[in-house]
Image 1: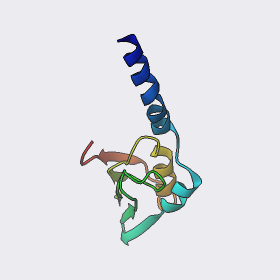
Image 2: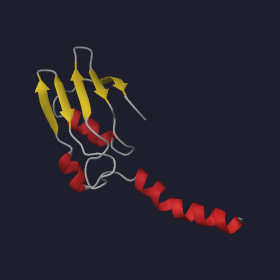
Image 3: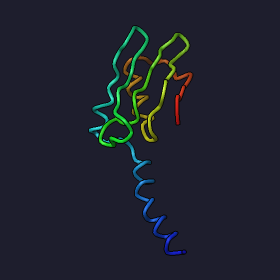
Length: 102
């Protein structure tokens, strides 16, 4: 039983490490913010199965007088990239995050 536990731990370690790593330069290139309306933007992305892209679906960015509302925040490790892209269109603070699924 100890051998099975060690095999499981060693086998899942690469997945855990890759989930904590930040985005690659190829992924960053795909993470461009695009304007939909005066105060509405999206950051496009591919599905979570494509780890070579800005994966995890699209992000909505709604800018109001009070600040920025983000709809969906992608997979772990993308936070700074998302904030960097938002800062290219506004310097207002993020005041709300709506994640439609986990």
